[in-house]
Image 1 (spheres, rainbow, N blue to C red):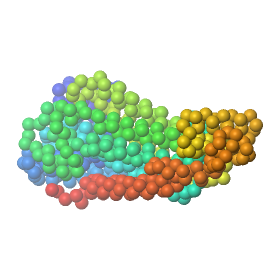
Image 2 (image 1 turned 135 degrees about the vertical axis):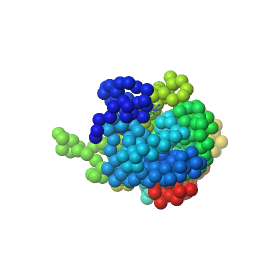
Image 3 (image 1 turned 30 degrees about the horizontal axis):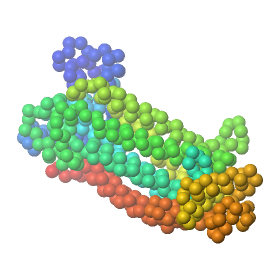
Length: 486
Ligand code: ARG
C-alpha cells in the first residue's frame, strides 16, 4: 500500500503539512469500522443513484460510480478488499478504492453528503442487520428451552425463593420463565430495530444540503422505514446504538441468570442436570472434574456487555450538538456487545439441548424440606380458618416435625388431628403432583396451565421467526446487485 500524505486526505486541502503518524494512528477508525464496509458501499450506491436521478450529477457518472461500488462490494464479500491506516476510515478507504477502479469521476460521489451523515447512516444499517442476527439467536435459545419444557411435561422440581426450597413446581414451568425473559428481549430488540430504522443521509455535515436531493428515494432504496426529522439530531444521535447496547445488556443478564442456575444444578450439591461431555471441560490437575465452563463464561461475559453500555452512555453525555469525534467510540462498544451476545447465543442452545435433566433428583428434592407446608396452610384456610392462623398452625407443625426428625409423611392420624381439627377430617396433599394440580390459575404451575404457557410461547416464537425471516430476506435483496435500479 502506497504512503498517503496530508494532501491525499479527504480534508487535506487547507493543510500545508502532512499528518503526524501518531495523529494518524490515534485518529484512524479503519481498523474497526471496516466492519461496516458493505453498509457504507450500499449507502453510497443509493446516494449515487439518487444524485443521477435528480440530475445533480450526470446519469452516466452515477452509473459509473454504481458499477465501481458494486465491484468493491464484491471484493468485500470475497475478502479481497483491504484498508490501511492511511485510509483513516472506511468511508475514505472505499472512496480511495473507487478512484482506483473508476478514476476521477469518484470525486462526484461526495456531492451533497458528509462523513457525518454517512457514518450515522452506515451504523444504522449495520445495527439493523446485527439486531436481526440477535433476534435469531434469542429465538434459537428460546426454542431450545421450550423443547426442554415440551420433552419433560411431568417432571417436578423444587421452586426456590432465597435459594431455599419453597414450593414444588414443574421443570417446564421453571424453564418457561426463561422463555418469558427472552420474549421480552425480543421485544426490546424489536424496539431497538424500530429506532435504528431511520435514514440519516441528506443531513449533510449538520444543517442539510444545498442540492435538490430526494431523501425519500434514498430511504426507499435502502429499505429504511423513515427519514430523520432534524439534521442536527441526525448527525449526532447515537441513541439507537445505546438502545441496542441496552437490549444486549438485558439479554446478557438473562443469559447470566440461566448460566448461574446451570452451574448450581450441575454441582454435586444439586445434581439436577448433567451437561454433555461435548459442552463440558476438565481440570488439568483433578482428573475427576467436569466443569461447566460454557455457563461460567456466559455469566462472566456479562461484565463487558454492561461495560460497553456504560462506556457509550458516558461518551455521549458530554457532547454538544452536533457531530463530535467522540462518537467514533460508539463502534467498538457496539461490535463487542453484539459479538459477545451472539457468541453466547450460539453455544447455549446446543448445551441446553444436549443436557440430561435428572428427573429423579429433582422429584426427590421437590417435596423435601416441607415444601408442601403452604398447601397444608391453604387447606385450613379453604376450610374457613383465617390464613394468618392457618400459617401459624402449620408453622408449629413444621417446627415439631423438625425437633422429632420427621416429615409430614411420617405423621400419624392423631398427630395431624392434634395440630388442627380440620386435619382430622382432611389431609393436605403429600405429593408434588397433587400440590401442582391445585395451583390452577393462569400463569400457575398446574400442568394444564404450563401447557397453555408453552403453547402461547411457541406461537409467539413462530411469529417472531417469520418477522425476522422476512426482514432478513429484504436485507439480502437490498444488499445484492440484482436489486433493480428504481
Ligand atoms: N470515523 C468517524 C466516526 O466514526 C467518521 C466520521 C468522521 N467525520 C468527521 N467529521 N471527522 O465518527
